[in-house]
Image 1: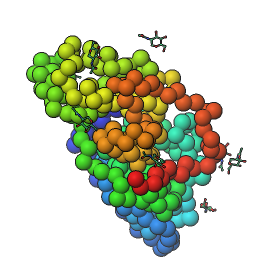
Image 2: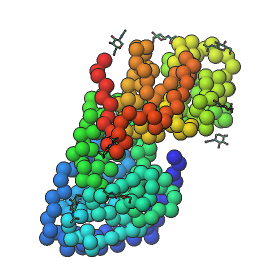
Image 3: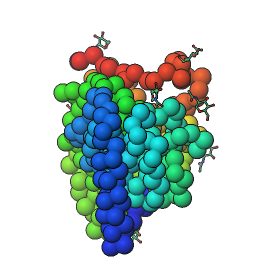
Image 4: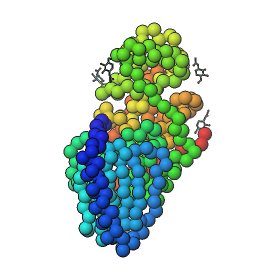
Length: 309
Ligand SMILES: *[C@@H]1O[C@H](CO)[C@@H](O)[C@H](O)[C@H]1NC(C)=O
Ligand SMILES: *[C@@H]1O[C@H](CO)[C@@H](O)[C@H](O)[C@H]1NC(C)=O
Ligand SMILES: *[C@@H]1O[C@H](CO)[C@@H](O)[C@H](O)[C@H]1NC(C)=O
Ligand SMILES: *[C@@H]1O[C@H](CO)[C@@H](O)[C@H](O)[C@H]1NC(C)=O
Ligand SMILES: *[C@@H]1O[C@H](CO)[C@@H](O)[C@H](O)[C@H]1NC(C)=O
Ligand SMILES: *[C@@H]1O[C@H](CO)[C@@H](O)[C@H](O)[C@H]1NC(C)=O
Ligand SMILES: *[C@@H]1O[C@H](CO)[C@@H](O)[C@H](O)[C@H]1NC(C)=O
Ligand SMILES: *[C@@H]1O[C@H](CO)[C@@H](O)[C@H](O)[C@H]1NC(C)=O
């Protein structure tokens, strides 16, 4: 899931200001029909989208690519009069009757491939631009806004966030081909009890502890507590044809990611992790398939709420 983003140039900025002018005018023209927008969502944790509410419309803006989506309530006059489809702003009439994350035959198509050419029904949905699981999960509000389903989105986000999700887990990246990075990585590895290895591989099922040791150029494993204590984790436990559910299921269920992290860091030995596997204990990937799905896929997923330990 790689994306490239271009920054706004002066031409783009002028274009945006011009559009803004036209759009304010349209809003005024429509403001005689006052339409209740329903509940609103507020972005609390996510960094990369913003929302604004008007009487008959909403604007949602992707901070990362600067694109804005003007969402016009279907029962306002603006709905039939206003249509934008430029690289900076697109309009959608809401609530969407129909939407999709995997085809382009619908009024709206949510995609994370923001660097591909896009038709007018495409909206960039990029939870993976966020740093933490909680911020990624908040993108459910981005979807909720298109469906006038803010209260449902708020409820789901409230359930997965609560007191439970800790935002303090940070990640560092080392480039092992660079000798300074390599030394620094080895030094850090000597000091830690638990390692989560996020190294990319096209074959997760073949990635074992020895792959890791080769990757970091280590022959003498004796000085690493995380190895003697068998705590070396990867987030590729659930895979389908080598594609990780980490980029899909784990986005919407950060509370399960947190539960996995807690088990990795404070092991009870009595909890089966969902997304993380411990390769120091030789744990394998789990190949997931449609036959393992025990719910009706036409019905929205309810978050799995774990009991407090
Ligand atoms: C607007 O959408 C709502 C909900 O889908 C629908 O019930 C209503 O008929 C629509 N109104 C118009 C004017 O399209
Ligand atoms: C949703 O879109 C699909 C494909 O265009 C169509 O077959 C279906 O009837 C639509 N459903 C609704 C409720 O509009
Ligand atoms: C890693 O470092 C090597 C050598 O300095 C460099 O050629 C390579 O582009 C770097 N890779 C990344 C992903 O930064
Ligand atoms: C990876 O594992 C599969 C079977 O699990 C095997 O067929 C394949 O050859 C392995 N690939 C490598 C590079 O070892
Ligand atoms: C270290 O490597 C040796 C040889 O590969 C292996 O026998 C031993 O089990 C390893 N120790 C740990 C703690 O992984
Ligand atoms: C190994 O893990 C146990 C239990 O988590 C912990 O008490 C112990 O200090 C760890 N030992 C080392 C060498 O990290
Ligand atoms: C393990 O988990 C089960 C179910 O959550 C619980 O009933 C049991 O007491 C736990 N056992 C230990 C040793 O913590
Ligand atoms: C799945 O849910 C849809 C929508 O509620 C319903 O029409 C369909 O009959 C359900 N399918 C099964 C197998 O329960």
